[in-house]
Amino acid sequence: MQRVLLIIGGGIAAYKAPELVRRLRDHGLGVRCLLTSAAAQFVAPLSLASVSGDRVYENLFDLTDEAEMGHIQLSRDADLILVAPATADIMARMAHGTANDLASTTLLATDKPVMIAPAMNVRMWTHGATQRNLAQLVADGIGVLEPDDGDMACGEFGPGRMQEPDAIAARVAAELSGEVLRDAGTLQGRKILVTAGPTHEPIDPVRYIANRSSGKQGYAVAAALAAAGAETHLVSGPTQLDDPKGVNVTRVETAMEMLAACENHLPVDAAIMTAAVADWRPVDMAAQKMKKSHAGAPGLQLVENPDILASLSEAGPRRPALVVGFAAETENLETYARDKLTRKGCDWIVANNVAPETGVLGGDMNTVHLLSGDGEETWEKMSKTDIATRLTARIGAALQTEKQVSTK
Ligand code: C5P
Image (cartoon, rainbow, N blue to C red; front, side, top):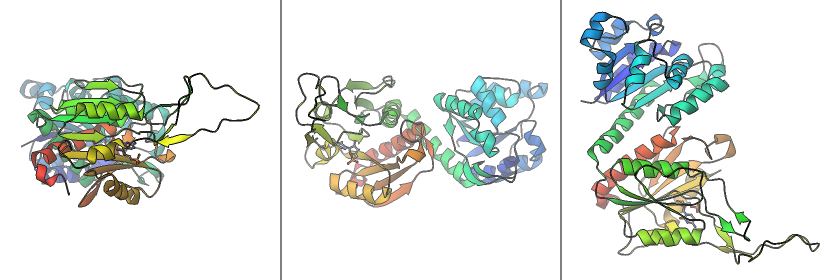
């Protein structure tokens, strides 16, 4: 049985902890609870002990506990640590590596995956300090279950409400299935191609057409696939990102170069096309820098770029068993994405809303829909790293039952 160490922070949302323990147990997970001293004001240790079927841990300096069950052992016994509710204070202490009670000491001592479900007043959540701490925690690889919008105990409305226990439990269970995959190295022996980033289409030696893709999602996918044991080849347009660990990276500039690099890597078991390939390129690149003239702006003549996703999806002996496209839209997300699935002939589309107000472009969080020939799933808002992990788990499962991959 996989085990979750649930660290309960001292906020009003702590009253949901017994319900959260039940929902985690519904997923077949073992749960052990650790309360901060503030949390004990909101939820009775005894009720947690009865729903978890285990004793509840509270105090770092309880010598009996240190002898029987040190904080290191608490972390060792868990497959994942969940902090819920994660208060502004506990997030700050995690971000700064403070270790002054049992909860923070355990969090600093662990090498297990950690997820947090923040809950706090809307102003505390949006405060620059909390957002800085959040960014640090995401950078440290901590999974974030973003708070919901809603009425709050303090009488205000906005983001800051802890996600509902069933949603949190589902995310934890999904993360643990990803961990199982990573541990088992399910993608060992598989060769997977990933594209990422924008392309740059030169106008003249100093100017180019580009787009706002940061490449973060694609790099996260490549990193997760490599961590799961796949021989991963990333063909990347220009980005500011470092090469992901364990990934073979080919850097290109243009769509034509990206297509050639992809074809060079065939055959592969799966191709995950996250790149934001420019749809058009200037017909000819001017040999010299174009000069301003009194005749006005030059007319840019564009020609369509090859569609790499559609070309890799074409039936034939070199078609990967699984081809996944990404669709970034600012409106009519599902309709456009389903249309793309048919038009391009790929097996799955991961669709996301990149309207400016979502902060997805260049940001660390994302909300996606996974569309296949016969279904559609909406994934809760999560970090790009968490999306990559979950997608990797799905790819691993699909490649094991290849017949189910393609709807064609
Ligand atoms: O048509 P659209 O650009 O929105 O499609 C997005 C999907 O198609 C992404 O998976 C992207 O990597 C892929 N694509 C491609 N080659 C192109 C255009 C898009 O591989 N020329």
